Length: 362
Ligand code: ATP
Ligand code: FE
Image (cartoon, rainbow, N blue to C red; front, side):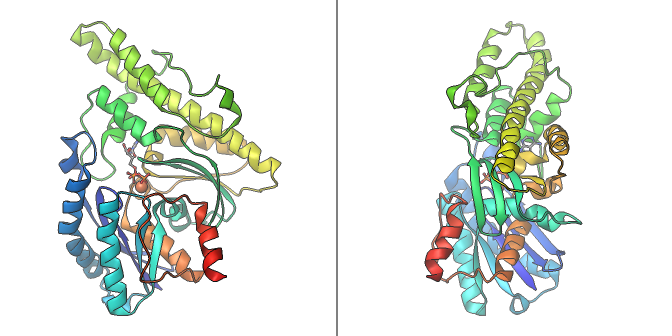
């Protein structure tokens, strides 16, 4: 089987064709980093204009590269949500029209399910269900149990900023230039700077260690961001000193983020044991999962809990058409095909997927 996947939920226009044999036949992407950097964040109207301008060319490139005629596709998958309203609409409208004209199945994919299922595409031995899953991206910090395709339990989410958002904001405070190209942006630039720094130079508080909600599996990054800001204000005004300490601040921030992730993941493993869930692996994905320091620490934690850490290659952790095409494939194979009239979902918790299909089939 061959599925075309279209992704336009945020700032990247992606299209790809994958097969049920887990091959990438093609992958085309148009990045918008340059358009948004000057604004310090994504501007919806700018993103909309860029998706509208580039999506047709990106889809054409994906088909040409794959050497596949549109009529030879088995389904059209598209990101239905969550994401920016105007951006999602561009992809959804294109996918609906394509699918309807070709008379092919349309599959609306939850972007976060796309991130979660990516590891089942890229790994030689795909992680079997159920697995514990940490999705760390620009808009989300989700701790999940993936029971099956379309079936998730959410153990925790962020109470304020997403982890990628915290990376982006701290990178901005430290005035780090964005890294160019795919897998670039502020977070990746901060990781690079942190490699040169001392993670113990600044003692930043690990979020929620002393809060009353400590028993939960939710995350919080806003306080950490404020702590970084406070420490930065205390630095001597001497520019040369400041310059030296930026790397230390980046390293201290990253060290604290990792400590927080480890706290909550430890609880996640415990929850699985207490609830009779025999997790086969720890899967991480989303843009922040391309961070090497995070991968190394989480890999040790997984090992201590007797399971492997599974993480897609860095370039497939950030947004791309492949993840939507593959999630579409997994859904197609289970008969989870949508109506041409489906709407987009700006907010769309993964836990709602199963309930929605129960109502539909009854
Ligand atoms: P969502 O998936 O929640 O809708 P998104 O699609 O915008 O959000 P992704 O493309 O998955 O997010 O990830 C982008 C985020 O990942 C950005 O915040 C970026 O700074 C961060 N990021 C990318 N590489 C790294 C890295 N090496 N270290 C830390 N953060 C990173
Ligand atoms: Fe994403």
